[in-house]
Length: 390
Image (cartoon, rainbow, N blue to C red; front, side, top):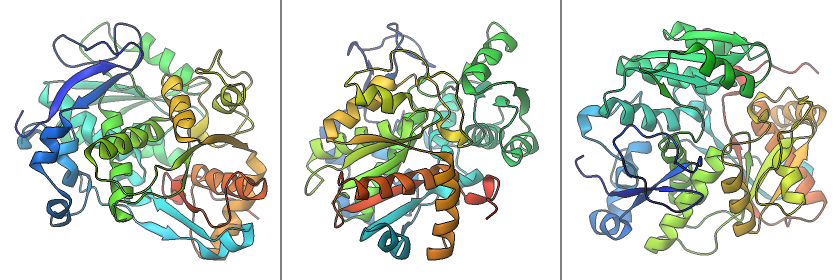
């Protein structure tokens, strides 16, 4: 590959270097594979001033990505997403410095475009033609879009109660959509039962190494937007947790290169009281989720993951950063979504609103200071989910 600074793939559990022919799934130990780079070579190839002269969007960070030949790049015009100040709702909640990283302007209206842009690009370079994914909704439509662009056949397995717009969007883009009773783990089982024995690639969260590299660009953007100084605290809606893991990976790489000023942020995993396996494990001081969450009961679709495949990596990021985990209830999400829209004119998606509710809890119980520079992640355009009624 041209201009690629990947040194190896590494098992997240054992540290073992992965060997074998691509495309890659997960490690022989049954853990996620992480892409590692020759960061000295990256630092010799690009600097901050060079980045500043490039067009916006995730491909500006190509030296930090598993960048194949330019001919293989699958892009739908990914933009750098804005940081939007939320002063009125912050004051109402007792805070001061609150911003939302708004992922809703990406292709198919969610942050899932980042991971799928890189993953589909890499799979195209490896000659893959058939892909499938279990999804709460947005990952499926993003895969369908990038898969269509790459000329791939796509299969999407989604819960029966997933937002209709995401199902219809994936079908519009040419994917075969399967509606499955239950939530995303049931979708994963249905995918394995339905797809043929071979000839297709599983794009499940963290069961391949490249979606996390796309999500990593959220952290790279956040660092550059802050003048290479990061916020004090980041609230992230955590289902599979790829974005939280990816950002922490980005910050570690930037710190090793000496690009960052000041401290790293405290990372906060946000779930709901109806599905909070990470919060339960964190509060118990565990390094993994011991068993899947039972009796999932939440309408915040993006966090309905009983046990994340990357649970160890999520919890490690929380502990290493001095962060924490918070669960909020669905009623809070409903009410806060309306409150933010009317206070600041900003329409959060349910997952983004859960982060705002978590911010309110953290201010109230003293886990963060009023003056802390906080960022919540609005993972999708609010119009992709049913609009709350007052």
